[in-house]
Amino acid sequence: MAAVELEWIPESLYNTSICAVVDQYSRWRTDIRTLPENILFDVYYKLYQQGRLCQLGGEFCELEVVAKVLRASDKRHLLHHCFQALMDHGVKVSTVLANSFSRRCSYIAESGAHVREKAIQFGFILGGFLSDAGWYSNAEKVFLSCLQLCTLHDNALHDNALHDNALHDNVLQWYRAVECCVRLLHVRNGNCKYHLGEETFKLAQSYMDKLSQHGHRANKAALYGELCALLFAKSHYDEAYRWCIEAMKEITDGLPVKVVVDVLRQASKACVVKREFRKAEQLIKHAVFQAREHFGHKHPKYSDTLLDYGFYLLNVDNICQSVAIYQTALDIRQSVFGGKNIHVATAHEDLAYSSYVHQYSSGKFDNALFHAERAIDIITHILPEDHLLLASSKRVKALILEEIAIDCHNKETEERLLQEAHDLHLSSLQLAKKAFGEFNVQTAKHYGNLGRLYQSMRKFKEAEEMHIKAIEIKEQLLGQEDYEVALSVGHLASLYNYDMNQYEDAERLYLRSISIGKKLFGEGYSGLEYDYRGLIKLYNSVGNYEKVFEYHNVLSNWNRLRDRQFAVADALEDVNTSPQQTQEVVQAFLLAQGH
View 1 (cartoon, rainbow, N blue to C red):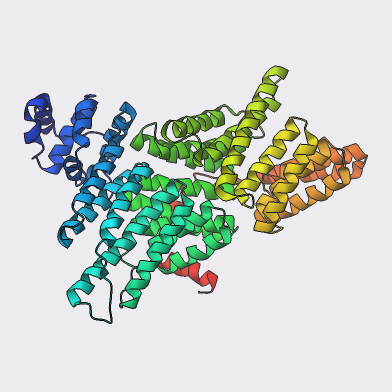
View 2: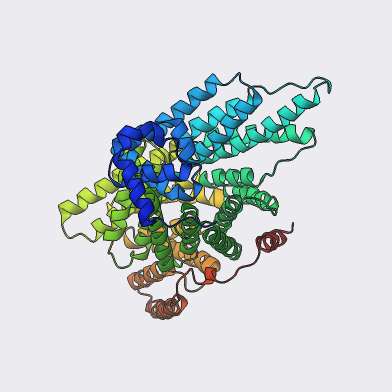
């Protein structure tokens, strides 16, 4: 069912009644809590609209009140508005609720199974809401409390002597524990707690094994999808791809649409980094369609799919369309969550990077810089200064500052911008090394970025060292013919060509970069421009004018091809058509894998 519109459109008489109740709020506060959940929510939303956040905060810090308003599920978007406004106002409502729930679970630990089950179900709803809102640490606390309730009375089996009722209770607890682990893994992924995420996955597997030993089976699609997300975040792309296949095998009729959409999203991203672009396109377009049809075009889940669609478009070199898709995703998230929210920050960062790539040749980076700075401002407002999420945002801002500095005509300003970019890159590198270690694609990217920066700072030996280190790591992890390898090879070629006069090495590297780019993306790949221009400069420098003429023609043909290639309409146009059924998409994907 599609979510309701965010605008307030009540009946006038009903609205007058709500306003009358709100006017007497202080007098009728206790009685108001007995109202049906939809009416109760409308009273609280009116408090929010009138800016009475202290009173609203007093209500929303009560578990019983929140339990009731969460049942008004068709108004969840409006609840996010209220919740985010309270957080921005300084009311730590997410922390208060998580702590209250944790204490309640401690009180009822020795209660009967029915009481514990009821608490677990509420915990799933509360933790899910906090997770959807981006307050991962508090959601994690809620799910850990649920997990404790799930496993507290796990009866041991002794020679099959366990009574049937006790076995039934155990099986129910194991199912709940698996569900809890999936939710816990999701929030730990979102909060970059990857080591704990791996432990959570192993715990979920242990409960899956217990169920299997007693003839039961839980669907593994959501669990495997979250594992795929974890491995993708750690740049373990081969493993992520393998597990996305396993997740796709688990998609069956009757699975929640959210689970299906999330598995399709993760599988698409895994296909992108493996350069399986046709598969990625089919998967992400189906995910976008399903999310929009089921949740509506203003729902956060739809924005999730758009961000992954933008990622696909950026990686297939459809940069202009990726910017438009990222902007749409950001608009949705801002309309739901407001400004100071982690989901908004990640959308700002994605838009910043795509805008930077889009405007790279024009040198107009104001829009990209704005979004990069907004992302950093939001993250530093919410999270600790050493949080891993800052690494990529700082990296994007540093890339933008470097380009602005290069085009700057004031020496003092140029040096200041380059130094700021240097500090940002070093901070990002340290965060990545702390999280992933030296031998990781993310770490290699930061080395490569430092290499480019040192070239701009005219520290050529340091630049060469960084580029070579980036290439060595990427080649070992991704292979000789990967896009990331081509990027670093092209950057090292530029250093040798423009600043170190090592023309033979530069020529060899340019040709290698061109070969990889054409193989992956075709003759119209945007990155080829810089390699072609580099070769024209190189052949001019060595006096090979025949080659200069040849590559001028190649560049002219490339320009004509680019003009034709992306003179296309809205990237969502293909998604608007009626797609295949989900099972058809799944079967087509699995058949392509030979499964």
